[in-house]
Image (cartoon, rainbow, N blue to C red):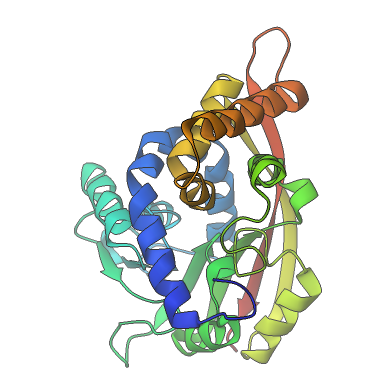
Length: 290
């Protein structure tokens, strides 16, 4: 699918299939990612001013964040609803919540963020979304629906990624693959780096009816034991690269993964330990429903 023949419904189907296909990879690498990403969950909970006893909605929760972080705060008198397109991701999130003893206060619902499959009269004290807004083909529609799901005085706190040069964790593998393969599936469409324009993002929040809109940039550090581990991580979870490589020869596949490994080693590895460290920038945004 290209920008010229973009079909939102077909895009969502493709997204659901992609996330389902990499759910096991996210589970495998969860601890590695959360060592850095937990900072973002904590910031979103802080910006949304989540407290004990509240009702919280987490949109595009993946395998459970920041829903689980919120669940630990709201406690037994609160409730967290976590939604995602991918049933495979949700199943892992539900398993994680159960392992932490949060199953009684958390509910996992397969739902399109632009058409939330929730009771029409259901309202939330706060809504969270960590790295999910970037994948929505109809952002304005989604934000309007989210706004309607908040109580008066409730807040939406979300995180998106900054521009590619400030997110090497993602851009290095994607740029290296493009060097070998040309364009990747979905180029120019909603994706992980598509909402880096803060002014445009604020306008979308304003259009949806949010007030007191604020943004904050925070560093997010991801570390891998080696450049090889970073390449394996990408093999397990980066659907666009996996998809296009599926049509290539084994020799071409190995060339791409070897180059991703070498680029990570050259640019981001510690010469003594061999560990690879990516310092990235996330943009956190919060808006109030007055």
